[in-house]
Image (cartoon, rainbow, N blue to C red; front, side, top):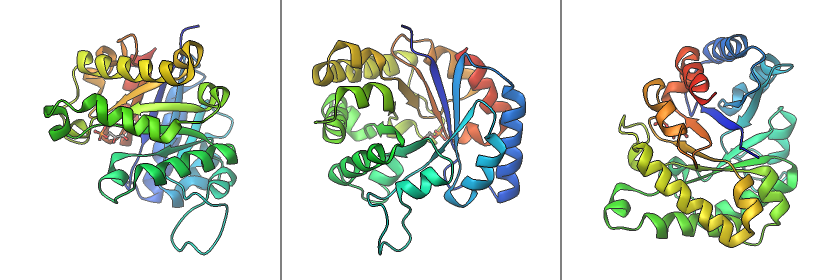
Length: 253
Ligand code: 13P
């Protein structure tokens, strides 16, 4: 069965509450009843409940950008998967490079989060990707394979097949305007799918969507998502305007 394309807006630490409401309302309005592509938005934590109300009863789904691997506790400043669920989210983004590299999150910490989020009923969007230095040193496969294996090893096939999305986000392409070429994206995605096949078998590897992230724009979206192993996009900057985000969504149809 062909995989339905999945386009996710990662709003990062942008938007005021008014901008978040306007953006969510515009995405809901402009998407209409479109169901040939799956669409989700991931606002900052404080706006989740407000955006949840706006996307309710629409095909637009909601995700959070992070979580802590505990239900509750003395973890000042952290947000639990249960809270995220209660706020109306289906998804959580984990392992984003801005947290791995900017905030020092380890493979082991991300592994714990992935398990906790799945146990709580959240679907996980797991980000993997290499730095420019790693790519130039020929380490693309080693790095992304390590990130994937560390986060997923030991999970049940069923969970991986139904509840997980991989986002390949080469760090050198994030926020730089320099997207991976469609061929570079396809090569990395095919490698990741082969790794999934090795870990979980053919059926699971074919079921898991692998989305691309890193300077996705309306101008490059169709070519990148047109590759056989690219199943969608994780969009940063261009998701902050309904017009550019929806143009990327239409490129996926
Ligand atoms: P940009 O689309 O701004 O490059 O960000 C990509 C990203 O990090 C999405 O998670």
